[in-house]
Image (tube, rainbow over all chains, first blue to last red; front, side):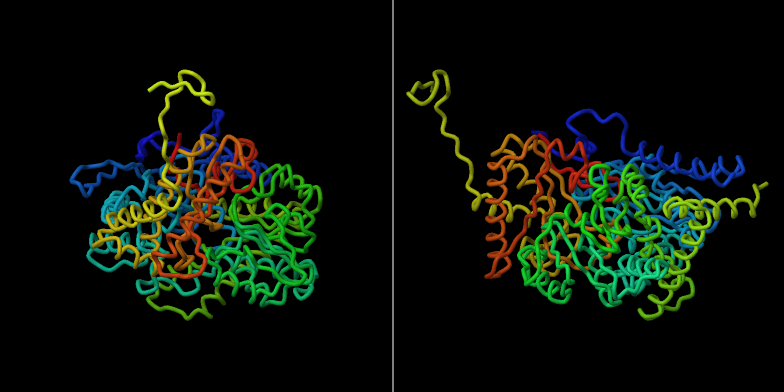
Length: 439
Length: 182
């Protein structure tokens, strides 16, 4: 058995050799998708070339004095894909597998996501290759502060605004904000989003992604001429996104026929009593659906839930749940992607062939990014809204962007995923065009 | 000492191997994980760590779950050679929603990657899940059933196909944390 240190833990791999590192795969995929869209939009080759690579990539060595006095050097990255539409925006992750290709790909995806929902940001992403569980709280703080100082030349409320990501949280954001404030001699809370509420964070953030999913589902059904009171929904995953989407859709009048978590799922063709289910979860020792029973309720597996006959299926759990092997069994009329990447490319083709409408993750789960933007706005104006106002602004953003993507896709005769990316790339290209190339 | 008995082939060492039973292993692991958490957080001791865990502190939870998960993975893999590696994962759809999920109960979400899924492996895992639950209930002073370990076993086929929770092992949005490998 190996002893574990950050140096010896390698990326997850199959028992057979992995041909290409996942990060490189993802970047190649991002570029391929951009190339396809560029051809469809007949994009200017020069602008295409600009979008095909990040504007700026910064690799830094982050020395940290550990608690035992030794020095460890961590590698950190901040990649800014595009600032054409506004300051860059993107999370910072701490993980053993962080690499430049992964960060690069994720930064580009942020550019498109911000453009899709029409918020005035470009895309960025950052990370430090480390194992935060191997570090004490003080070591994490020192690493965070040093990393912040190392990338500070390219950060700023009008340059690049980080946010939480894998293994970072509100505390890490608070450290970043404090470090910048100390170095600049003034309190600059608008430098990051995802801050604690008592430090310039925004109300409504906790529910934002799930609320965005619910809003998009509502708009989708309106466009299809369907009443929400007659809309049946199945949601895979009952974490923050899934549970909030369920609660809000239920409140809107939808019939939630099925939900699931890691322990499995519940199905009632007449609709689940969400309040009773939530009470069960609250009192369950594992906080799971496991053990819930009731008249008319059947247990289903996570796989079976994906194949239920419902109007709207919301995968809000893990990546790659709808794949080539099971896509042909999906009976839902529509899919609203609450998770990131729940549908593989192969599955997308099958769903399209079967006339299943898919609202892509880049739009459907953008509620969180939208409220991050609202947090930054509130910080800049030094005035904070109540939760109702935040939710009202969120709704306006999501409704407007859904309508734009829907109308464009319909006019172009393309599926929503492609339409969203085309709209996003076009917006960024327009911004590049308008600004010109300096000097 | 080499022995030859009617039930043991010649040349096999007559060495008595003793594995700690699940209850002892669980209570030891819990104590060690609380110490680990206290050390990492700079706390006065394991009681302070327990207090933070009861309050749902996310950083304390991360340290505690990591060390507990690592020990549990080592214990299970010592009993079952099918287990090849172990990971901890976040049970949230997106990474920034993990950050905003609010206080959550302590729960070790683990993926055990085994060459094959066997009944024996499931038994070992269930035994440890039960022992940990009872040990944790004692620590936090709860009389009802409590669970601390949610272990998902995946095999080579599932990892290759990327089905279910195995999809996370090649995922990019919510990559799991590798905690043990054979």
